Image 1: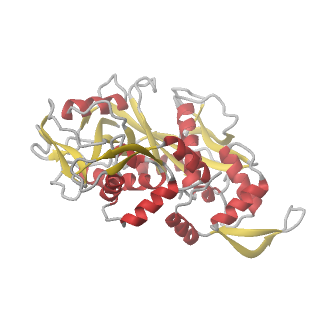
Image 2: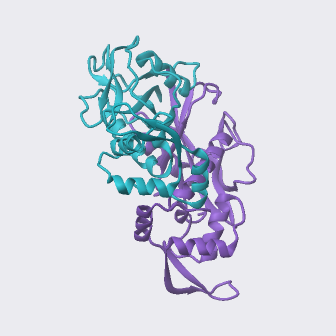
Image 3: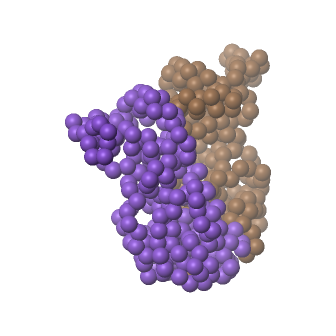
Length: 221
Length: 221
């Protein structure tokens, strides 16, 4: 059976203490004017991965991010144009960079995952699956650190975990667990701007994480 | 771009203390006579998941297994017939059941992962990726127990871990780690046949595993 193959690229970032996703407003039918995950058709001579990177840049201006293949969706009827199989990718950004609408999209903007507009195609299902996978990955990988800049305060770290998990964490408990994990390297620097008192900056230590994995410890939040 | 979409179903089982994969010998071009992962084209009105289950049963007689979507491979040139995107699934069987060649395959047989024949298409790459994912999953899930019958001895359990990881594990160390995990429920029954002395049977306790996950413990082998 001849089908068309597309890519959809789910980009997450944390801003204003909430998990956001980058969406584009469709500039042409079907679902013209509706918000959608950035993506498009795979070209004859490009790999699926290359298509994902190209579409993301064309539609949103986001480039040079590590895209991980997530899942392939291809139920009959998911696209009114015919049988379209879409390969979904996802990536995490350390901050919600300004979004720029590209050639195929009228508009690109960050939307909080907790208040999504009506979406084109089965993109609500793709986003629900992406969020589930992100939450699972938070438990056994260091994926959370990809949502932070290189240096961060413990409060910023906790905000990222809370934003992804969608619930408040108890501060003392969170810090004790992070201390047990020993994957943070305290820096001499402090952050002062906009804070009632200076807060120490940390960075993630990949070396300590590898030791931790050898011991068999997850991230239990 | 119009392409064709196929499914490939990687089925693993442990037999004779080695990890095996179920392969079929292709009955028609391209790669006629070569061994391949069971699979085939997705029909116009079926979901990709349904196609995977159908092709597996048609080509090997294996039915009623839980298929997990693994990865989608679609590089240009991976199939001499044109652009073919394949969605790979994988499943684990508790024992290497007899394989029966179906309509589209000349022959179906279990092959040890350590001594694979030359394979059709990019199926060597798909198998390498599947093995990597299986090994990773062994670390943070209870996937290993899917390769065992409901009741098993500690020696059988260790053999499965060794078969997947491709290396010997130290017996005392393995048993101590399993004890710490407390995910095994000892049964009153013992296994006597073919053993120098009777060995206690165990079963996997899903309830204990959930508690373990809450505490944040991986499977550190």
